Amino acid sequence: MRSPDFESPSGQTSLSAAVESGKERAMLALLQRSRRNINEADRSGRTLLMRAAHGGHASVCSALLALRRDKDAFVNVDAATENGKTALLLAAESGKAQVISVLLQANANVLARATDQSTALHLACQHGHLEAVQRLLDASVGSFSRNLARRVLHMFRSSVLLAPSTGVSSFPPLFLLSALRGE
View 1 (cartoon, rainbow, N blue to C red):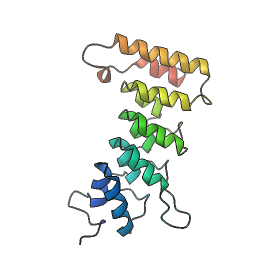
View 2 (view 1 turned 90 degrees about the vertical axis):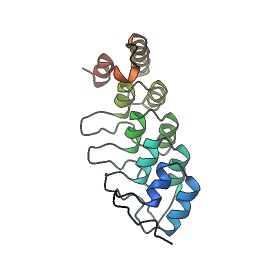
View 3 (view 1 turned 45 degrees about the horizontal axis):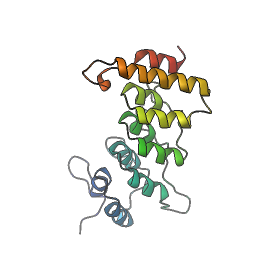
View 4 (view 1 turned 45 degrees about the vertical axis):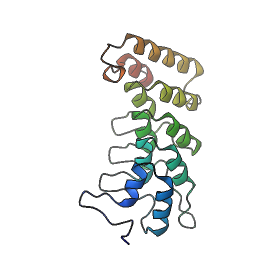
């Protein structure tokens, strides 16, 4: 039987494939046999949690966050890629609202910034993910005033209504991003 840590020429392992496809039971079985550090990034710079978050696999994220590999080794919810994107930023960018909730319950840093200074809220707004925006705003109330949160949500809804028929994701609401950055 092949090791779950064996990499294909492209760098994919059976463990990362199970995570990316949302196969929680297979992932847990492979993790029992794996010697890999649970927070280790692959060749693309992403951890297992980042892959699950980007793919929208909330149950896999929950299972990973519940793991305790060594005495004090837990999954690092705020691990970042080379460009500073955490699992929360990746989930926000791809509009995975359920995953956002799971990560926030695990105390993911809602104010984490990528190297381009974008936050999860910036990315969710930029890509037109209303449910993700709402969940992030709910979690950010301590960082934003309730008034600003309501204003941002109103501006976001307005920008969606004004978006060209080509789709929301092709319409970056620049005035909204400016408001979020305080410009």
